[in-house]
Length: 112
Length: 113
Image (cartoon, rainbow over all chains, first blue to last red; front, side, top):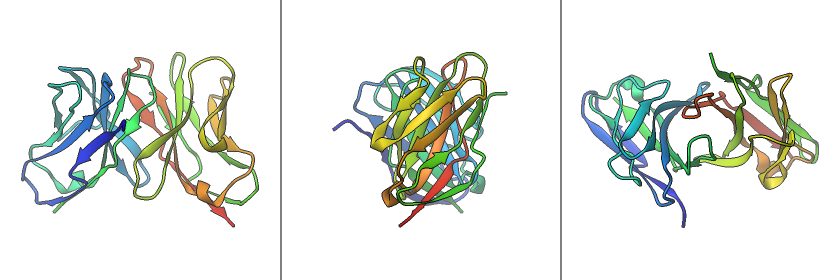
């Protein structure tokens, strides 16, 4: 089944404790992206990747890191999480940029 | 600056009536426009997109959208609403460079039986 998977689905952590949210797609898509969803703000793009080893900042990259060492994986790293990063996070992929994106199920992160 | 506006936080409609969810955009160049739907506790699902060609685009679940270049709008429509259409709807546009995607704030649709 073609899909985007994210892990974990739920995470409660404390300020400053490094964490990684994994994202994997099995559709051989070139383009992958991370978003955060906050009430009243819709989805805001954090980082995107056009292909392996090619990443760039979205609109809200502060406090986040990404890497794209393999085509299928695009992990999101929070090296020192803060409470303002409490949010619902979505990973998405598409065959190429400007194409239909397929979304993962989301990761609900709470930073205390 | 490039942006997407969904002017209504919530739309209420009775089952069987037509529905419209509004979206306007601001982007230079030719826009690539999308509608996505989010059901409770789920990820976003693609509904339809406009790239070029016919201004009326048909998508999943009986939805359609009309691209209006002069009004920079891309309103989502359905002739007859179902209770199961109740969800959160997002309009999105790919920016001119083609790598960033800008989403609207979302519109919650309530369809009453």
